[in-house]
Amino acid sequence: MQAFRNAAKPLMVVVAFTFFAWLVVDLSGISGSTGLLTKTAVGKVNGRSIDARVYQTAVQQNIDARQRQAPGALGLEDYEQIRNDVWEQFVQSSVLDAEYRRRGITVNQDEINRALGEEARRHRGYEKQVVEFYRNNPEALANLRAPIFEDKVVDFITEMATVVDKTVSIEDLLKPETDESSTASAAASAT
Image (cartoon, rainbow, N blue to C red; front, side, top):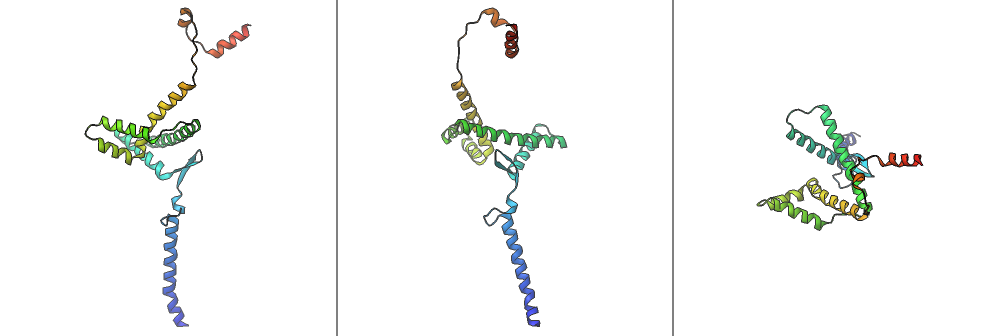
């Protein structure tokens, strides 16, 4: 019986160590599966989870940028404002992306490459570093993509707009603008 007791101590240590190692590996997601510790969403926008690390990185970048613009200590209200601004950026980006998809407005890789080439040409002698910078920084690449989207949205609106020629007298043209709804309601009540 004593032999079993003596053999059980090292066996229990091995079992405990194995269990602890399994727990750490499984919960952290090191094994490739999504562990508990890797599920760190700050929130959801349009059904898409926002990873805490991505959000915190964006917040830190905004804090750094604010401190470069105005050196000095930031107050608690400043930090809260930055966090709220970053969250608003995530929400706006998600909503705009959904609307772009809904309207069929896309930016393809050729357009991004063209914009990247134009940006690189603006920095003569540093073209390779500029291209590497944008390839390694998705946020910076998004800044290249945004004006392309803006141009496409303007084109989309222009295509949908109808232009109507209307003859207007000089007196009517020089009259101060009034709210059309109040003018329409006044005209309706006058009849």
